[in-house]
Image 1 (cartoon, chains in turn blue, yellow):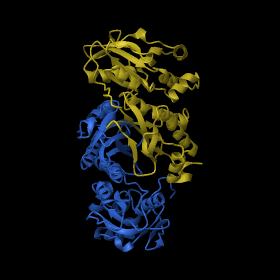
Image 2 (cartoon, rainbow over the protein chains, first blue to last red):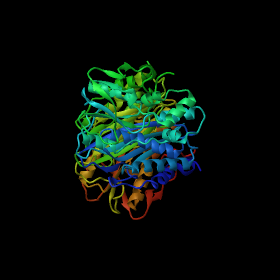
Image 3 (tube, helix red, strand yellow):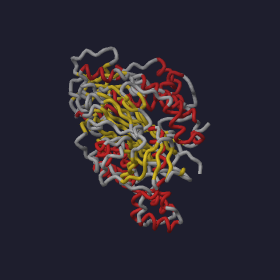
Image 4 (cartoon, rainbow over the protein chains, first blue to last red):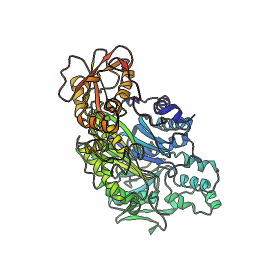
Length: 314
Length: 314
């Protein structure tokens, strides 16, 4: 059965039936707008588009995978402010012949990823388009804390990472060569695993700046360095290249450190902390903030692409 | 110059430079997420997709028009809850050859429509796609009032409309026949003019239910009737068909009442009120809530299409 066979309102009814509401929801789907608790008196908001053929391929990822990934990309942005996600709204544009079960699986993926942080999908919109586009907006609650922006890093701070780096890029490289394994890498590309809890925890620890790694560590740290008016130096030997990444890189003739330093979409968190802070097990120190500008690796400029530009020419 | 010539980050920089921040913005564009005041302790949220070829055509509407319309569709949803809009986030997917000035005009339209209600664009995302898709999410503040949902209408209430009905549909019909005038109708299709202030005002007056008219009056009242568990009867002679609509309908061989009762996208507000409420000049009484179900006109079922289904077959 396709989405056009159940129609716009049939699709909405079937999708919303799969979306139970969380404790922050005051009014869920079905009205002109939803209403969500914002007891902090401020609301954190971020939006991301996932476009078929750019962010996912339907022959590589199922609806469930795309739902997990679309939710993760947005929930990680909320966590990267040091906030707790509360809710998502989701716009789905799709061709009329999209299988209904794909859309239902998308809802399942959105629900399950949101549930990891106690959030829920409170509303949405559907429309027709030539390819599938998923537009997600996430809301979050600072719970009385100050936000951790990109602008607070100071020379002398340490740079630390929580979560995986390079796994999604490695999975993408594997899929691009026509392979479906190693499964752990392919799954990392399909469904990133952001370290959500580390975001609010970093705020409590006293992080001076933070962002999520969506475009690549060097690219995203570049934005953080500009916003903070500092330079950042990474230590190459601080990055552990796991056996899975090393093996896949060797098989594909790649250098795995490229994936680690420039691969996006794992939605790791990277933050700066005063050097005196005792970081927990979630965080690995990978560099330091210095006077100056730009991002260097072992003191040298990084050769090669820093990250992804959606409009860059090949 | 095209968006690909300035690149993803160049596009973001040029667009955000056109987006001053309003009084509700705590942190605007440029970080992982924005932060907006939600002093009520609750936040109202609604999302809508506008898809090229479905909701707009670039040969009919400029970027500025699409920005106004995309903002209006979402701000009207917030007003229809009885809330005051505070902010928008906007996702833009577009082909790499989209003229940069189209994207800049889109930002101008979003800014100017938002400014009508004191809101601003606090964040967004851009991506590449084969056609233009604008995904807008609006946030709003209930300012201590109870929300006006679709579910509170009671038998004996009056049904009243604020704003225009049928103008956008008439403009669409004119454009579809290859004409560019009457300008007032064509402009109504390009840039709806929702009666934003009437939303919070209806809440203060004691509206029992409310929604915006995005799919068509009969269709949208049908949803309200279901949510409230009531029937609604409209009085055909309560709808004034303006000279512009009547003339255009005659020229195109149409019945203008079809546009008024089933045309969407003007984003009028329709609400139910206790019969004892003295409504101000913004509201015209057009019918009554009755025991039962469904929407009738002068006691009879409406023959013909009630409104729009994005996946319906022609």
